[in-house]
Image 1 (cartoon, helix red, strand yellow):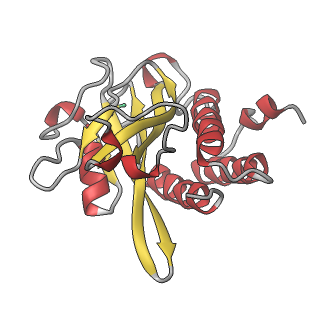
Image 2 (cartoon, rainbow, N blue to C red):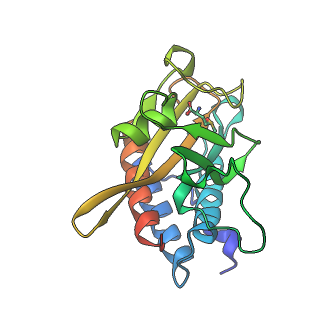
Image 3 (cartoon, protein in one colour):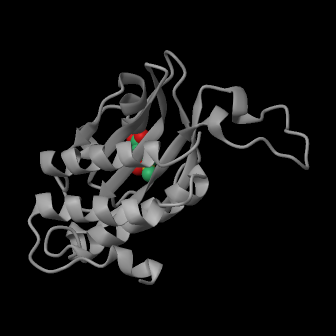
Length: 202
Ligand code: SME
């Protein structure tokens, strides 16, 4: 099957069936590859395009998902090999950096330093829980990367290594409609976040 076809969505799926289908497709797509940049690139594309194909829930006009991607804790980014990092290199700082995504350009850095964390992604990262926002304008500290976004969901990426939990970053989705995401989407996305974490070397 051509890779692009993994985002094809059969007609008539319930929400639960939709998320199981996306999970299965992503499992196959990530097989045999463990680099997180590569896998997160394909994961963001698959989720984004699958949601847009899932009419009438997400694909129709102002109901559309308009962004899907990852912010990753800066120490997990590869160290440059051919150049000297600049003095303000973010690798050692308390920040999430923009990772692979689909959608329009977005903010590159999100501060998660104690006392300075702000926004939906930072809250999901710091509190280690999914944050489901029905109306972004009502969310204190929301960072507006796109003025057209109305609702958002952010799941933390949590790895269990040696019995200890480490938060690697977050999976973030935006939607053009108020209350675009619900608890069923949350359950589906949390399983996908778990799949992505375990499919990669960090
Ligand atoms: N709205 C997010 C910022 C990232 S963009 O939505 C892509 C936040 O409040 O953290």
